[in-house]
Structures are given as structure tokens and as C-alpha cells.
Amino acid sequence: MKKRFTAIANALIVFAALLALWQLVIWIFQVAPFLLPSPLAVVKATVGKFPMLLHALSITAIEAGGGLLASILVGIGTALLFAQSRWVRRMLYPYTLLLQTVPIIAISPLILMWVGAGATAVTLIAFIISLAPIIANVTQGLISADENLVDLFLMHNASAKQILFKLRLPNSVPSMFVGIRIASGLAVIGAITGELYAGSARVGEGGLGYSIFYASSQLQTDYLFALVAATTVLGFGFVFVVMFLEWYFLHKWHESARGPDSV
Amino acid sequence: MTVSETALMVELDGVAKKFPNGRSVLDPLTLEIRKGEFVTLIGPSGCGKSTLLKLISGLTPPSQGTIRVDGLTPNNAREIISFVFQDATLLPWRTVFQNVCLGLELEGAARARQQKRADELLRLVGLERVSGAYPRELSGGMKMRVSIARALSTNPRLLLMDEPFGALDEMTRDRLNEEILRLRGEQSWTAVFVTHSVIEAVFLSTRIVVLAPNPGRIHATFAVDLPIQRTAELRTTTEFDRIVAKVSRALREAIAQ
Image 1 (spheres, rainbow over the protein chains, first blue to last red):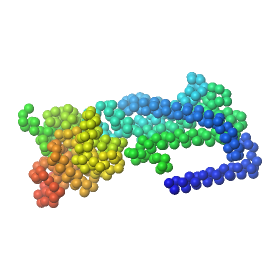
Image 2 (cartoon, chains in turn green, yellow; image 1 turned 45 degrees about the vertical axis):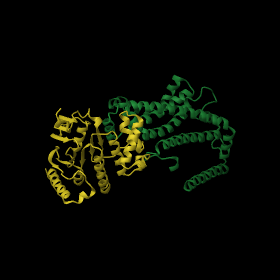
Image 3 (cartoon, chains in turn red, brown; image 1 turned 30 degrees about the vertical axis):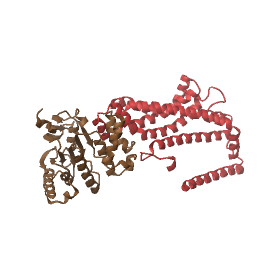
Image 4 (tube, rainbow over the protein chains, first blue to last red; image 1 turned 180 degrees about the vertical axis):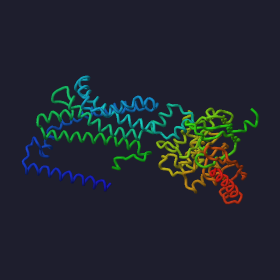
């Protein structure tokens, strides 16, 4: 506990020093505020536009969260299908790779055309970008059950359903979380990138990505900084929630479970 | 069915096994195991002893020949067979208690019966105090005990064990050997046991089958005419040493072939 406290204190000291240096550079070189605002200006913008910032943050959080949730459900469903036979995997797995390699920026205009600008399009983009790692990791977990355990289940006349839900699915949980952890970061990136293209149905109102785009076009650089900080907070928030859930579900039995405590 | 037939637990008649590529794992082999016997298969790697267990359990079909377990095909006899694997093969996400429940649970037994049986067996193997623990909290010997408790939970008439104590240290192995004999005395199952250890084989068995490798075949068979009631002291008797020497010699010949 004390060690952790010291680690946090050290990080804060470095952070404070960087802020001081930043402020100093601005005072000494008289940098134009629209190029680089001072930390104080950023704080002022954050406080002044806090309701707006929070609104943008909540929009993006819902889009990224919705996309992630959808990709978890669809990803696990697809993996359950993939686990049924090698034949199904061979037929369909290349499409998962396609999903992983297609640049999201390239398909955003298409999605925009199909579903129109707004939260639905952004959620869809977050979903598409975060789906592949979940399919890949859950499939891996499902098919990598110990052969002896499969034999054991067979010896007890277990049905295919029992083998799937009492053996393969629980066996996949650790790698499922590896997939979800990667996907959660991608969902946030997807939502923000998506918003740059399809962020808002109404001018001046939208999530973090849209607001970043809007603030930069208005040269509100101080608010832009606040928005960037908010995206970081959002990304951290997602990873933290996923890591907590991972710890909650795995710490009792799995060696690799690393909780918030062990970081 | 005649009396002599019903007294047989396992019948292997001209049973052979080939790999898909045509290489022979087991040459045609005939072996009968009577009810109540404790038969150990011993031999160097490649002699097909694990394959033989898988054949008896029905997990893999023979390339030729017939197998009967208690007069039935292995697949139909699954209810009376339990398998103990080389590793404890516990489900890591389940507690010890839930692991012991697994067999009856899969067979659709009522929850109350599963739990009553799991309690009994954990007491039997002396693990009632760790019933709420997860496998990763247990030592290798304790895990193996859980595995044995799980195997016995379904009241098997035939217990197939594939080097169950191979990964344990010698002291733990000796203790578990004594425990297996005690359990066998209290219940009455027939056992087919695979091991690399001659001492373990002699201590446990009523009969030892020495297999030769490449392809697997029976090299020699020994009846172990030691008393049924065996204690740790048995290992230090001259009679015990004499049988160990005899089996070791046969095993050396089998390897040299």
C-alpha cells in the first residue's frame, strides 16, 4: 500500500514538473494561445465549458460502450459458431481478418451513407473496429480446452452442449478478457475517429471526436486540449472497468488474473 | 452368458491399433481381466500402454479385434468406467467440491445426490477441509486425490488409471499408493493401471503385464502373489524385492528388443 502511494506521488510530481515547464515555456517565448495554450488556459477552458465537455464525453462513452457491448455479444456468438468445427473456421475466419485489416477511415463514409450521421453510425464504427479481437481470442479459448478434459467429459456421456457450456466456454474466459481489453481500447478509438466523419446530426453538438474537429476549426485550442485530456480519461476509464471485471471473474482461480491491486 | 464370462471385467480379443498413417501402435493382442483384479500395464514409451487404456475406455476405437467391458461394448459400458488421467485434469474455475460433483452432474444426477456423494468422497480421501478451495491452491498430491475422488464419485466398477502418480514426488506417490489400496479394499472396483515404476506396479497389482515397444505387444505377464492386505512395510520384504527384480528383468528385456 505504501509502495503504491509512493509510486502515485512520484507520478504526480513528474506531472506537476511538466506542467510548470510548459507554463514557463509559454511565459518565456510568448507563444500564441491558438498554437499552444498555457496549462492555466486549459484549466480555465475545462472549468468554463465543463457541462459541454461532460456532455461530449457522455455521448462518446455511450457510443464506444454500445459498440463494445455489441462486439462482445456478437463476438462471443461468432466464436461459439467457430468452435463448432474446423470446417466452419476455415470458411469464415478469413472474413474476421478482413474485419481486422480494413481501415476504419476507409469505410466510415460508406456507413455514413447507409445509416446517416449521428450516434448510430459512430456506434456501428466502434462495433466494427472492436469485433475482430474478441472473435479471435474467444475462439482460441474455446478450442484450446485440454484434450484430457474433453475425454473426461466424453467418458461421462456429456452432450455437445455440456462440453460447450461447462468446459469450453469457462475455459475461454481468460482469453475472452484479453480480447475485451484490446477491444475496449479500439472501441474508444473507433468512436472518436468515427465522430470525425459521422459525429453529429446537428452542427455544434456531438461527442469528443466531433468536438475536437469543431474546436480545431474554431481555433479554440485551449478547449481542444481539454477535449484531448477527456479522451484519455475515457480510454483509461474503459480499460479500468475491463480490468476490474477481469480481476473480479478470474482472481479466484486463474494464475494470470491481475487486479487493480497488482498494477 | 456363462458364469466364467460374467466374471470377466475386460476382454480384449485380437485387438490392434494403427495410426491413420498405417503405422502399428499395438499388434493384435488378447488379454482378459477378471473382476476384482488390479492389473498394471508397464513398459517403455511407445509400447502402447496409454493407447490400451483409451481402447478399453472407448475413447478411441480399435483398428481390429473386439473389446468387451462387463460384456458390453466400451461405449455402452461408460457408466461403469472411470478414468484417472496423468494430470489431475481438474476444472480450474471450479472449487474442489464442484470438481468432485462433475461426474454425477454430467450424468444428470439430482443436486442433492451430487453433493452428498461429493461430501462422502472428500471425507474418504481426507480433503473435506479444502472442499471450498480452488485447484491452484492445492499441492500436486492433493490435486490427484481430488481427481481420484471425482473418478470414484460415479461408483465405477472399472477404474482406468494412466500414470496417475507419475508427476509426484516419491513420498507422495507411496502414500497415494497406500491410499488407492485402502479405497480398493473399501469399495470393490477392478483396476487397470499404467505406470513406469516397477515398485509401484508390484505394490499395487494382482497381476503385471509387461509390454514391449514398436509396435506394442505383451512381453510377459506376472501374477503378484502377495497378500491382498498390503501395508507400507511390504515394500521392505524380501518377497517384494524378489518380484520387483523379476519384473525389472522382464522390463529390461522388453526394452532391449
